Amino acid sequence: MELFKIPELWWSEWCKRLNGYFGCEAVYSDNGKLDSYGTWFRLMVKRTLFDTAGSGMDKDYEWLKLNVFTRWNASTKEGTVIVFDANPDIRTRLKELMCSVISPICVEHPGGMHIPFAQLTVDLQNDAVWNIRTAVREVERSRTSHHLQFSRLHDLARHAIHVIETLETAARTLHNMIEHHEQVSATFATSSTATDDDVNEIRIIDSAQQQIHNQLCFYKEAIQGLRVRSISNRDRLQNEMQLSFNVVAQKIANSSVEIHRAIRSDSSIMRAVALATAAFVPMTFVATVFSMSFFDFTINNGGWTVSDKLWIYWGWAVPFTCVIGFLTYLYHYLTASRGPTVAEI
Image (spheres, one colour):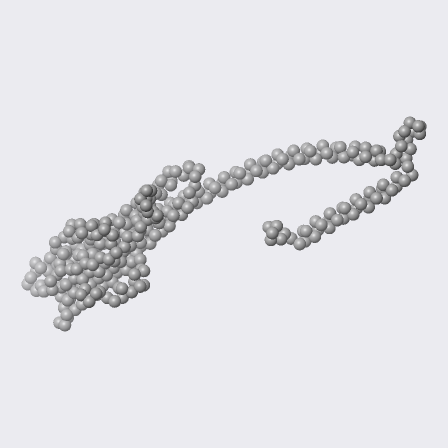
């Protein structure tokens, strides 16, 4: 940390948890000229891995992190880059980009070390965005399937939200990187050893600064374009989830209609049974009354005779009917006034 003059705050716990940032520090000599220039920034990318069957991975995504610190020496015009938390694939790609994307005139400028990381971020974010887009398109093409996987749709939406978050952070980081590059370019031109007579060296410095500025601005615009595409992916996923919910609701409604029709059919049958039963009730009552011992139909009596005790039947039947009717009414009244209990609900 002392050798590369890494700030203490860069090692803080809250700084490690940020999803992105950019910071810089210019160190001046005693005579007021630029001695060194340090930058530190963090970029994160969420890469989805949908083809993980048989790979032994328990997740369909991975977080790619770039924790970078750079230190540029004004006297030697050499820079040092330290990258933390980079996986082997990122390290390999960074080595290739370091040798290919930085032009010779940009090597001696402190902002030139940022170009490979900006391009790598665009490459990784491009893969992340289009992986989500491919998965969304597969969902749209299989929307006629009867197997609605709501959990998969929500997982895709979660990935899309995280991709948008990292894109917004990357765009802000590149924006701050460009602003600080402009500031240090002015300081670098002032602190340059070039004299007014050395016009050629001044032109080279200006050309390098302009080239770095243009490349960083292009990468920032690329990130902004990927962000718009990612927002479209999220909205398309929301549309598919809403469509799935509506399809399920429509199926439930259709099932309710079929159940209602079945209930109406059962009600019609029960109504017919009730009407048939009601038609036989008077005859059953008459047959029951005349079958009692209060009536005598024997031939020896020469006709029908009715017992003078028939009033006993009516004396018991009528009160009992009134009591049963009153108890039934009382039960329904008390139940309605009390309301349903929690167990009944």
